[in-house]
Image 1: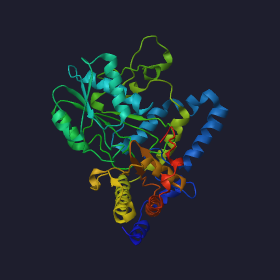
Image 2: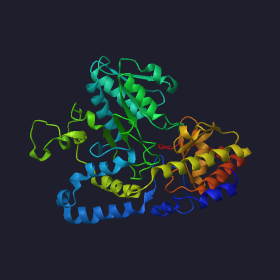
Image 3: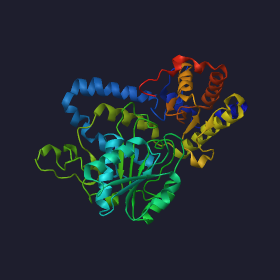
Image 4: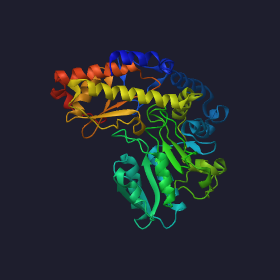
Length: 411
């Protein structure tokens, strides 16, 4: 795609004004919103107010006067329309890993006699690790993790499968599963389905209720821009609520937490999936960030995401110095999320060279440079600049300098 084409896309961008809502450092192109969303101005204001006024002045009274106690439910209800859920089905708490554990245990209870958790071999590792941990805890007779390649999921849905656990957009490749088809296939096989929305919530319309999804999880710190370590969310369809008890029976999931009853009694509905005391600063930051999604047309976000990633892929294909890269991400826009993954044997060094030059990307082992596109603040000018810098890094060969090979703990 030529620069004039990118200029035309820039001029017609209906979401361009959202960029001004973010604190974007000068001189940098931030293409890592699929790992950590940029900072919205409103979050800075909210966190300051929570710390200085609510915590600083009202102290513990803020649990009531500022309704801290209701934040997990209130934030969950703000997330609900972003993922296509009616009220009463989403709660904001804990991390994806913890919420996956809760929901897998629930799924096994809802499908007695079916021990298998089926997943994709290339699924995000934490989801697989949690399933392995549950298997080790209760034994393979009651829980067995099976993984197959993405192309073999349908044939692996046999009568032993309790739940199909998948991530909608693959973290390495950016490839997107067909949520409707796989949910339908799981139900036809008598299984439930659990979707991880970590790389899709906030950049595309999601239709959990309409597609009859059973369970879902997602995180608050990627495309929802809730900040580092922001709490995750959990969705449980109304039809499954109150039919099983999640295993992490902490006091916030009790029907009457402040009765301090020594015997556990589950709260009704999705609120039983609360566990310990919620982190109020993180919840408040996410609550503020979600204001950007009020009255936002997620289809327009998806359309821009497709245009951004498409323009980047086209640029890689057109620029001859970038020919050493292989693109893992599907060229079919209907099959890709909001990232582009390029393969190169020196991927880590190239990522470090890009970062040093102000194009912030990340690396995924063993050989992937990831470019994440957040439509609310990334522009088509960002695409052009990133391609130009990437071309310079590769053409110059500077990424071969030994200093770029010193691998940090976080990549």
